[in-house]
Length: 330
Image (cartoon, rainbow, N blue to C red; front, side, top):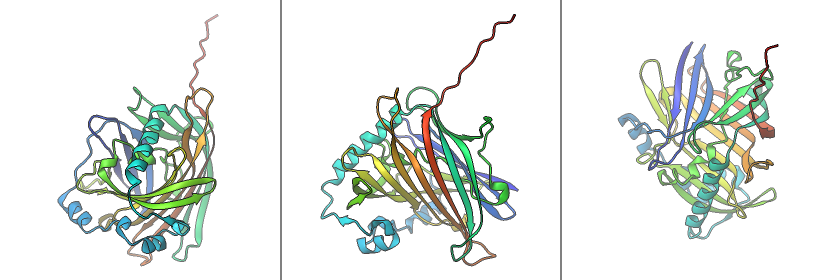
């Protein structure tokens, strides 16, 4: 079994930003993600010449005609297209304020997480699946906005970060920080397009597409192997932003380009956020409620690739506190 790691880091003008680390564990030819997120000041890696050539050929889907984009992303079929981009600067500014406020107000939290992991065949039928319940933790370490970590543990407090990979599943977690693409410290390294308006449940939303700029990005997913080779992954996606408070209600992210050197063909993550109000937190926190992840790796054994789907549900967010009981010797 070989182990390789992914690192994501971003630094903007000395402002705090997050670093994401993922382990890709390959056993018997099968890949498994294992992410762990934090938010910290770090210098991002630079693209290699090969990666620059790869991304030079990339074509972000936000540049496609809208009817083609709707075919690619069916969730947009009820979109009311925008006439122009005049509202985009206002949307980005107020969304950045909301995202920055989230990182300022986030506290140590614990929630109940139900995960369904599955491997699918070429027709989309589930071959094997597994369901598990764990405790999901978000922990702040250091001064405000300096470092945010995400963990899993069982009811006895034992780490559950690597469960499932022995059985051949893709292990995924760390979604609370996905809104960072819209933070004030990160917006300059992506391009944005205001697609239009859409009703999403009870929310009237602005719909904004984004794509990282290869020449400016400092926020990467970097794959580093034991052979010294690495690959930096950039993302694109679509955000549904509530018109009343500029909170991101749903965020979809996709690879900006496939990575044939690691056989990674597709990765799509859709995060649905929900408002969580805590008695001793001054502002509501918008946290993941449901997450759907779909990953496809190309395979020499199957021309249709190897497909994985994970679904995460989060409930019962509450403050996480560690208490210490002092016992006086008798």
